[in-house]
Length: 89
Image 1 (cartoon, one colour):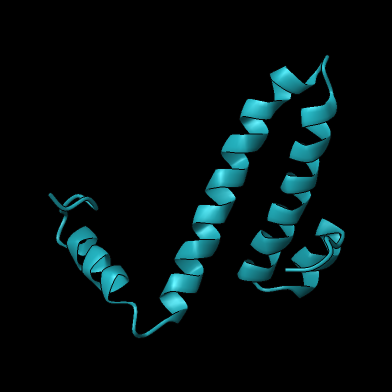
Image 2 (cartoon, one colour; image 1 turned 90 degrees about the vertical axis):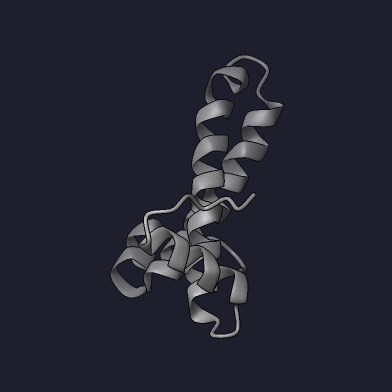
């Protein structure tokens, strides 16, 4: 990924994937700062962690769509299109 850029710059110039990757970097940095903050850290950590997980999931989904040989992704997409759950038992 690299170094985080200003979100305004990435938003105006970058693709959706680049914007999400930049957001992940910013969130990771804020989580590290939050972990050191004994006063406000426990209050803000859950929201930051949730947003980080959602962002990472979106990045993985986009990258998964870019791969043509992702058989598992194809199966899950087909199941979702058929209205079936993502999990297979």
